[in-house]
Image 1: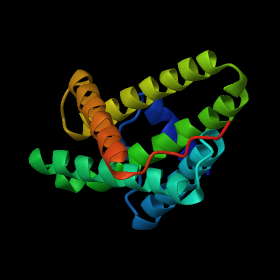
Image 2: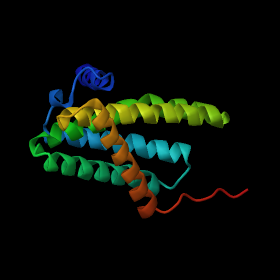
Image 3: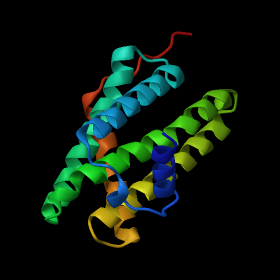
Length: 171
């Protein structure tokens, strides 16, 4: 377990690329399950939404991320890099989400600080994803970050268009 955390921490610190991530299917499925549980718990805790919406959001987000990652790798003729790339993206998302969610929950009394903190984590997530995608697509970090930012925007559009808005709390 320590080795897995160390691997993803080194990727998040831009030291190792996705090529060092294990490609076993069970490993990827475990990462996906962890991401859905952590993401679902975060949405349920922070946004106070029903469980179906809280779990549906990370599942749909992962589907969009996986589809766009596969498409980008397919276009560049790097289809064999999909499993380690997607595992790296999901594993780093899990690693970044673990400290982010408790911190955001603690900062609910200060919405401006909470928003700034969430923005900082989101920027870090995009940079890490850009690093991973840049390595996987055999391009520069700058291009990888632009691709990651574009994928993030597409994911937001798909989530907004597909999922119902969260319920508005009554006064």
